[in-house]
Image (cartoon, rainbow, N blue to C red; front, side, top):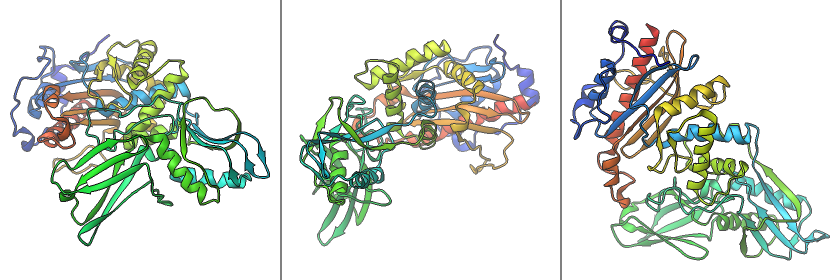
Length: 492
């Protein structure tokens, strides 16, 4: 049964803060869709109108204990969820893999070992660990030496077949954006390489390395050349064994650094491991990539943190590659024959239908980076209500701060919110849980999007398009206003 908040209850109980005058400055360029329904409480209508957002606004909110829907607007209409989709991915991975699941990366010997000499191949076996970093490979190299290996006479191979290879999470993003790297069965440092530059005389000293807090091994699989130009700032050109970048000299200034995506993950991981093995006295040959399931003696195993911990970090920092790797690992564990992100997302959509009985979830990836994904807020709320009953998700979500009229976080706000945010240019979302002042708990999802305008932005300008920051800021204000409205109505 659907319960709706009455106008009378709203008028007598409302104590929400509404959007500031600055948020009212830009009039909408076209009307909101869906059109306002006659049964929509006027308070929510006024908040949506005050946001002055081009595009569409949809939301749904329900009582966690009873599952009763309290209020919805366009609740069955799907919009891009952006990173709010990671909440669904977390539920998927927890259900399929389990909270205690650990990913394993191994060193395997394919051949006999005599007096510390491996008379065969050494294989670095990727196990889809999204958090594998240079420190972990350094420990594995040291452990290989401690296991007695001093020489490898065969080949050095890297197995990356635990997951399909994906060139870019969202090919529509500019090449240089570190949050849309490649994916394969082995990932190192979130498949990013550190590019740093410093002015040196009339030119620049440039480094490309796989740095962590403890190590800074340089890499051969990524190269940067400074060119005398203004635009484009970056260009990318793949070769057989190297990511080749150029950067505009005019953009460099005196110095700086940024992370660039890695497009050859297995070569990158192998390149770094060779350096770390050499520091332990073990010289390895040129990296060879294999997708054939390796056989042989396991010499060293590195285990990841438990999945629950991995997901907590994913939701806090919104790491796209983590979402994609755990999502694809879950699809593989379900026995799905996946060859792409879209295949894996389709498997997750089927799981959502089987588990929650929803049909309005149509993700194209596991991170929400692809703007072709669609999620209906009512269906996400259905999943959140079910998840809250087993207590799996809310403890992993980040606290969402409500603010005062000056935009400052209110520490002792009577409404407590744990949620996942989602932001693309001209797309914003928020979904999760809130506890009202009276102690009642609600699940909610709010999506806003100007899909039409977003589609007009050229690929090269998608990092910081004009108007996106102010649009997203107004959307976030609307999200907070709706949450305070629901909290006040429940509290009354």
